[in-house]
Length: 269
Ligand SMILES: *[C@@H]1O[C@H](CO)[C@@H](O)[C@H](O)[C@H]1NC(C)=O
Image (cartoon, rainbow, N blue to C red; front, side, top):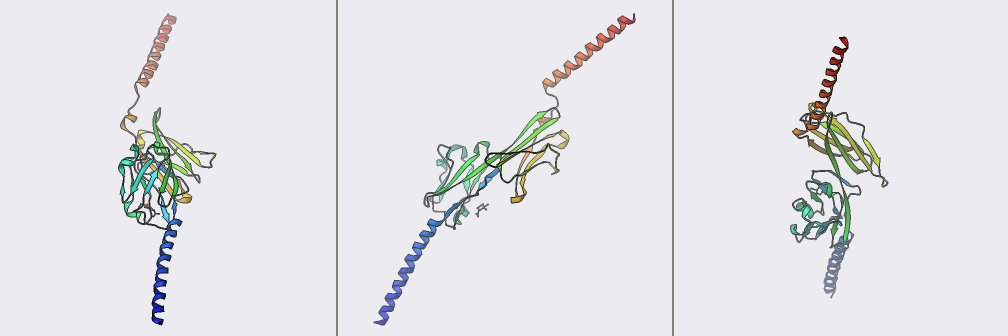
């Protein structure tokens, strides 16, 4: 009789543990949060960037549906992962071939998105959404720009980077990594408290053709860089308009000189 009691007792205990574990696992799942950085992710045009997103506590996301979407797009998907594969055809055409998840990381609850060859139009909010958990979080992507324009003294390079916090520093480097003396960095603080920095530098042919605009935030140890190469034609001297201007100046000078000489001759008589 006693033995039977023990057996029942153990069966009961095992069943209890079993259900307890199932319940615990489920509630642990419900408790998982979708974590994204609170600060915007900054990328320069043309770079590859990772939009971080992970589950905490860790849950295997490989078999879950993972949606990366941008509310402004139609269709809104930037990436759709379902039943262990990416549904490439579901995503917005401007992201085809440019987005991916790290497949080996999914089981570790890391559902970060890799976005390649960032465009200016990519700037905005990206939703990292898990329908199974009905949890969503938004990552902000900020795209910084570098421009080059020809001017009288050489080529004017301008670099701008928006939505930083705290205030970052901006530098220009030449191809050998030497610091260039640029005009003072302009800093603007928006109503949202975020900083936009921009910097301009004029370079000449002797500086070479490769340059880097570097934005660093020493406090959080973050550095972004944009490398650029000035195309050859930017350094080809005077454009046709300059030729006309130079021609006109020389022409005028010649006429003045001739008139002056003529007058001199006339009055010396
Ligand atoms: C997720 O994976 C990416 C790519 O390997 C990595 O850079 C990132 O640090 C990972 N995030 C976490 C939270 O492990």
